[in-house]
Image (tube, rainbow, N blue to C red):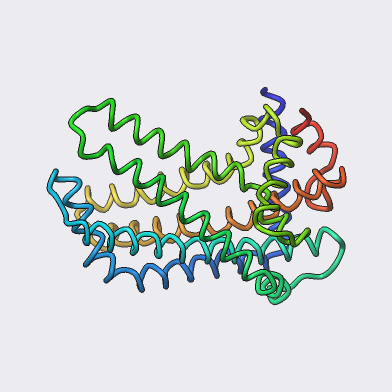
Length: 294
């Protein structure tokens, strides 16, 4: 297991190195982030007027009308749909660009966006399914919050997390399949599960080390900026507190954006390895074989 974790970190390091050599790939997570901000702004008022009263009623043990629940559910679903559409569109563009690079072709931001635009119908269908799963998981989690039994709250929280987590595993290769094979969403999900089983098998836990570098980066940002905030409070310096908060927000956002690009490189490379036995130019093929051998 220790060897597999080390392989995972090595693959993560190679993916980060690939990003540094192809900095244009960071544009796709930035596009995703901007899109999610716009979506959140658009849905802020409807959610505040319709969804929040219902959620507050659930948290306080109160009751809401059937109409309120229905409208709140519609708003939440549409919000999830918009968010998933933005994320999947950006990921499709990112993976499309990376796949071109793996094949030895040049890839610009426009090339990646062109790939995503050609698959808008599939992306929208994928987003609908993902939004449905996301809303179901959230409803299950929320259903236990108004219970006075701790076990019920824990069970519903775990169940909701498991449903969302299982879905994320099932669709791990769905975007690369849509990009390369350009098949239907149903077929892409089937292929994603098939590739996941054949490539990852029981060694998936070891591969989670790929995200270790990003976790360390998050921790470092929080520690450094947290120290600034603490110093500002101790010294009674409002400027230092504000600077610490701003740096923390931007630091976390930067790591998230970089992590999104790295994950796209890793995802596309692993898909290529699963189908051809060659991980491409970004990840060492022998390392991939050792890390994901079933």
